[in-house]
Length: 164
View 1 (tube, one colour):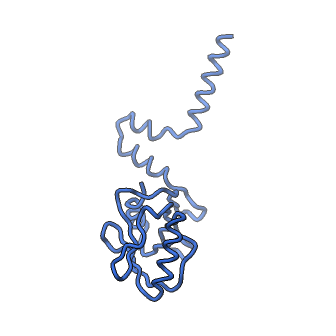
View 2 (cartoon, one colour):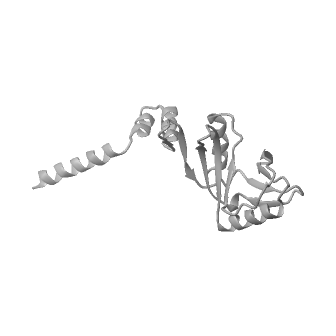
View 3 (cartoon, one colour):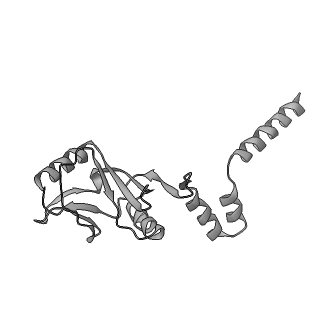
């Protein structure tokens, strides 16, 4: 009876280990820290059907501050108003960042866009202007798209500054 219990326990352990990816652990044990980090970074992405990758949604970094500033230099929203950040590939073959505001941010952004129609709204990260679109209409869905990326590496570099 004891042998059967031990055998069942061993089988359960083997099955549970085979269900998880041990590459980062094996690489780390073998002294290959760089390969372990690369594997962990790769696991953050989801491969799409078209062969491109989508960075899994993440919260916003508390270290790097993103702000939405009007033409009079008033900070209208900041990182605390953002709920999710995701990096994506569009159907128009371009990379973009999608910011999704929390409830408070959605209301504040709707007000900011309503009050600034025809004016520039600056999107700033750590005092560097990322984008300065002219507001055309009130945006009430709480979603912002930033799409001025030349390549995948540029997109991911920016995305990594935004997320935790």
